[in-house]
Image (cartoon, rainbow, N blue to C red; front, side, top):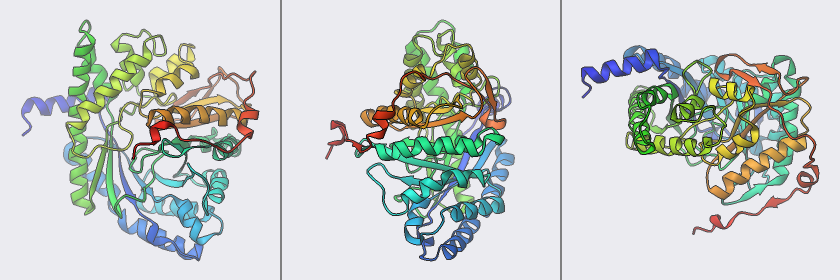
Length: 452
């Protein structure tokens, strides 16, 4: 039962602290849309998505009005499209165009799932889809793509890592007149979860129900405001405050997810607990770290503070929902976080420090803009480093790099909206990784994989 204090506290968090539901994402299985005729397969896909998701956006808007809680994005995640390409053959871009038409028809912000899972090698359809990603993302507005190139169980597919360096560069090059936006809609994973509601990495895993609703919550501003009331408390107290705040945020997500599930007539899947920042002032994970006591995010102690934050968010959120999944923790996307942007611009936050931070947070090197002349081999080497962190630590890591074609370190790339502003971060360009990347093959799975 909500009392008056709870109601007013929620109103304050929404009005003053940027509290929102970041996304309700409908996962839709397309396995029954596979067909040897690609055109027939596309017809089945369009029919199923527009049928299943016909009321997704209206229901989201109804819940916003009913509870007064902003729901920023309504999204769809589908079965990795490479699986359908394996059956139909043909040009995979036809699938991307079909997904684009479906997205426009139902009014969602994004559809994720133009994806391939190649952690242990390539099966039919995988290479064709990966090679088509630049064209698919350049010719659509609402499609997001992901490729899983490694896992703790399988190791790292270094042939795929090499391919993805080239794909990222190509995505940036053919969308250079649109701020290289193609690369911003592509993420490379290690240990990708099957129920992630956040873009660009969302896809609907083969172990998921035919149709399901997953919810991604947010709330960095709420956590920071709570910590601002604790200027001298010790870190045990700080962790407890974060846990209690995460509990409140997650309960709101549980409410929205449960109600959306009832109204749409599909199962409720998971709550993703992630603290997802925005460029809005006061809605920053970096500012939480600074509130904890690091003068500027990226300074010494940042990784420890982030580890505590991530752990406390999970502990608080798990108590608020029976079904927690996705990524769940704290995101550190540079261009989408006002504090990260400021720290990168003044040089305190480097890509090396970000890599260290990814060992304890939810995802990885996210929305990082790099110089336009960065080679494909260097991009691949960064992917390999990040995948190794995920593989050895049995956690999800990811890379979303945007080469700013024609620009250099110190300049900025303006995306606008939730994607924000990307300060171009310098890389080590005097040391080549090309020989390492060209070796190919597979980095074997670590000892941690032997759990049976």
